[in-house]
Length: 72
Image 1 (cartoon, rainbow, N blue to C red):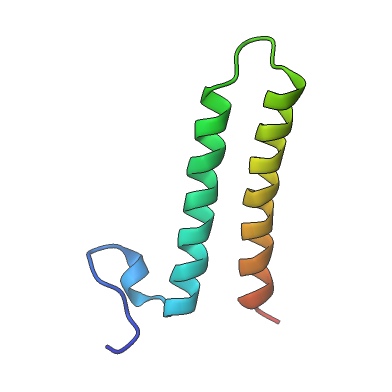
Image 2 (image 1 turned 45 degrees about the vertical axis):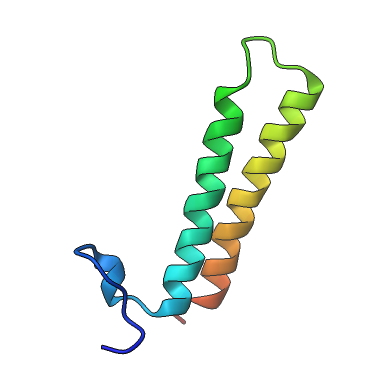
């Protein structure tokens, strides 16, 4: 129906806004993983800050979705 996604996954049954927030989370997670992969065994302060910033983006994506879609 209108506003529903495509494909075979459960995302096709979710509202467009919910899917959008989910996509934001996936992008933030991919960014975190990429930054974490670049860190060596003895991370520099800059590397640590980069990973911490990426983790903050993941947390913000979670919070945004949970604030918008919650059961009271």
